[in-house]
Image 1 (cartoon, one colour):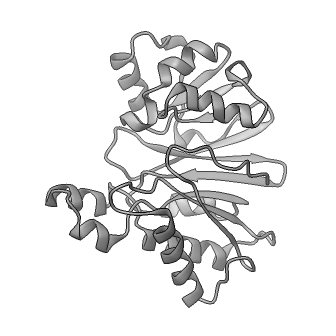
Image 2 (cartoon, one colour; image 1 turned 135 degrees about the vertical axis):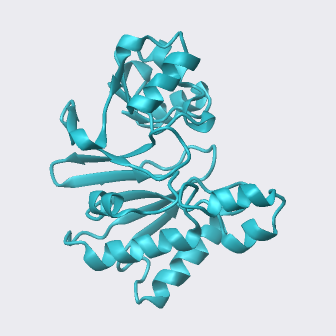
Length: 245
């Protein structure tokens, strides 16, 4: 499965290759929302992953049908959080509504046996629905888009800064840390979770800053990296290590 197709097709192929896979092996493509950095290579994936079904919300499907007419409508399936989970092969997929300035954005959680992976980016807040879906994740890919002080003194126009900080924008490093604290406090799973910070802004954050801010806030709440959780930062436009849960 692929979640989104917002990077160059050659990079998607290279990422699959690190897992010993190619486009023909993809069974499902899950699109979170219609912003360009999440769908710009969807046509390429559609053409090369010929057996793959594309899953997305009603609103995003309408956008794809209108803006990407070469994507076969019959291969795009609507899914809604209210419908609950469905299966792709032997993996259970649960969609969850996000709070972002897109038509009908969704995150996804995946479960196979006792293992769970959740991917939550592009949301201005962690709602109760989101939290309940992710709290038992063995791997939580979580947005840490910006450092607030860096955003506020940076070059973006004020209205864009307000949008990013708003409930329909993005999560800050501090927001991500507070979410992780609640996850660690309330989770019943005894396994140490892996948290991968993602969607870091090129202009308003750095990987080192995201890591340091989150780790420091968690440390102040008596959670230690390596003892209570494992923390990684996913780098922009680079293929990361394979994470196995």
